[in-house]
Image 1: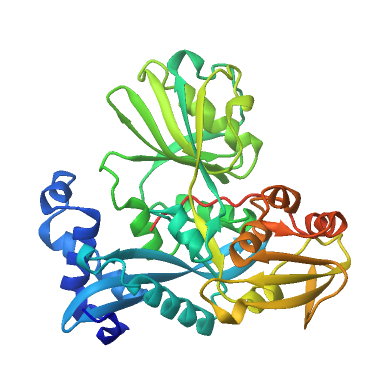
Image 2: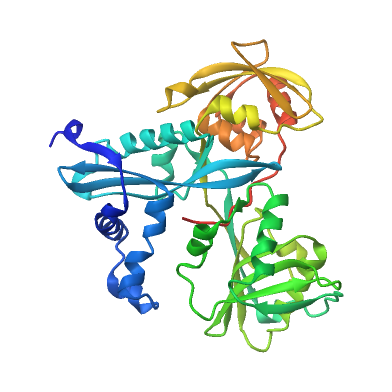
Length: 400
């Protein structure tokens, strides 16, 4: 087979059957497994229409047969207080007999080029292989933490002035609360209709949403959970302030007689154990989302640096697949914004596009990355980088 003879084009709704078939084969999702959790035949097929209609899906065809695909769904993300257009990569799949032919690299570059043209300067994905995506310029930018709390460890003496009320999945207070949370939380994605559909895609019907209301009736926190087999499974818990955090934990503690343990996920990248009265709980952490800057200059022009930093340094950037990012730029920073010029200055750092992504998103410090031999720079330049960047890890709880 000659890979150069394969056609690359964007998919349309007419390609739905092939798109769905490749996705099912690659991830080994069967009709039976989907129907066991309540999906009907038509729902299984129709659920993919919005992706093809709203996302940019590129496919590689051998004759009339779809053999590889790569989808980029447009979203908005809070990056250090600025709302930025991004793309979330999904549906990455290739039939095994066509693997190792460079098809995914071709589709990825085509998709990243289109993102750049559309003003999406950053892309995110959930990696099935961290080493593979690192070779393509992606890097880890967020964590997913899980915890297990025994019933006897649940809080009992919390007092708050507000109250918790269970609401429907479509409740306006609940959905608007997430938008408020995203507006004040670095790394959080703003969920549109398709993002909410993906959020609920695999949840059981008795998954519950509980909202915490302050004394004046203002919603300020929520949790999404399921109680099954004497275990409370917390999918997500967000809060705008300390009061709402305590109010939700009071509500969890009220289930002590109903459950043997509480298990859940935390995307704040900070352990919750210290905040509990009995901190002897089990917590685990794993890398979650990878990201890469798509358009170096476009991203830096929009990016918000630390408002208290003023100085000049150069970045010599390498990129394994995007030639437009391979350049040296001098950044003159003042008031949180950078002016860019081609070329270098005495304070220069050499790093890859992936390393720059994890640095600017706040996941790692420059000095940490230098210790890992991911940045080449002198000590003074490293300190300048760390003072220029706002060090706050991204909160990313969505998955596509």
